[in-house]
Image (tube, rainbow, N blue to C red; front, side, top):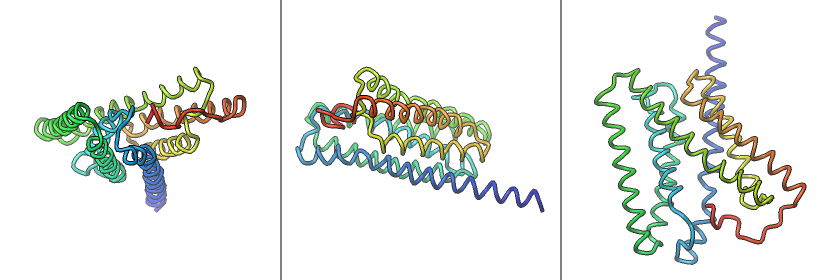
Length: 235
């Protein structure tokens, strides 16, 4: 009875953490909307880069694959959040391609095809050459590598804040949502005893704390005035 009760508590807590992670991830998926509103209004991609959205799309596909029951039973909330993320990234990429000039349109279209092909290869190899447990480990390592690579972006922003002594390129609510999402999935991974979830999100939590500390320090010491559009070169 006691073990059954503890199991129910663990299950309830992990589900709550996973749902919270999904909610805050949804906030992050909405964050590029001002950038794309500007692109649509000007009918030009200006100096924005589409690469972050292509890479985020691949990351979502890999993590979605890892979260599916055929790969990792019992962590469906990882699949749900990344399926939503994949849809958002595909929409952003489509808008970018539509309004890009011909050379960038061709480049972005080629990258999109390459990402879909790469994911197809990953899915085929994992199903054709690995048994159940080995398949989970193989895809799990790929998802960890992909997620940790994604954290290079916050590191660039942190470096920029320190160099410029300005928080204009590190919006507070975006940093807060990133921190809470990473913390939620870190807890979810711990409660599911899944290192492929809690290790990368633990790193994300630490980086989120660093961003919030830097924001607090530089905004109080130097203020929040900005002379440049918030999202311009770093969207």
